[in-house]
Length: 241
Image (spheres, rainbow, N blue to C red):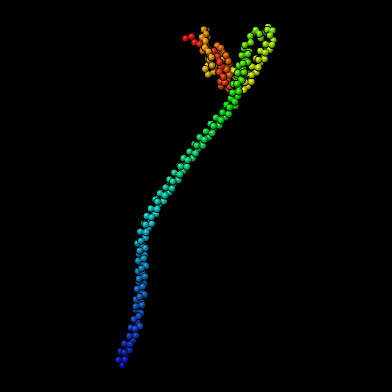
């Protein structure tokens, strides 16, 4: 009886050993995995906790480094814009100066052109008028060479008187026509000799007269628009010193 009990107990123990033997490693494996996962999570949290101040400091340093860099870039860009603006202002000033100079040159050219046109118009008949002066001189010579007694009222030489009157009228009309076109005559008798307006043909010492005075006019002078067309041909009193 006892032997039967012992054998059943041994069988039970063996069955229990066989049945429980695989269970323990599986439980141990799951426990190991659990503890490993927990430890890994803890280590990860510790790393995050330990690394977060460093990361924060690194980020702060990066932001601090980025701020001066941005400010430097802005200053550099501003400097470039200011230089470009200064260059444009200088270019604008140069263009304005050239424009003003061009306008001044154009105004001077316009005034010179207008003056030249006016001078051309005023002195256009200069050569023609100068050629007519010889005719005026001939008429004046003809009138001057007629004896005064022959043209007096008591003279009976009517033909000579009429001829003298006609020649005088012709000369006067010629001078009036020249005057209408700006050509005027001048007679410097008893005036001070002026080399710009007079041509001295001879000099004679004359007591009682001031030296340098015009005492004889052989040909009267003519001017056109204030310019000497022909100087008067005169005789001048010579100095006795």
